[in-house]
Length: 35
Image 1 (cartoon, rainbow, N blue to C red):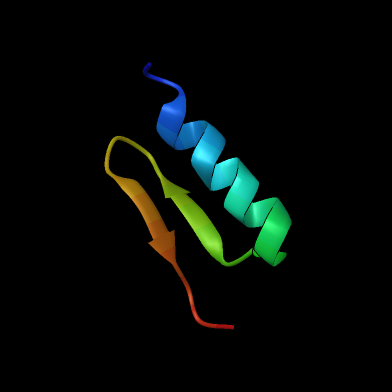
Image 2 (cartoon, rainbow, N blue to C red):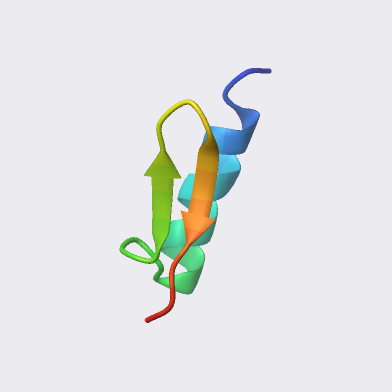
């Protein structure tokens, strides 16, 4: 499913409270930033 990664990232953001640290990079993927 094409949304699998999106769902996994959303769950990580919620579970680990990383909504600001996990950035979506358009047409590239995701980036984890330091706090």
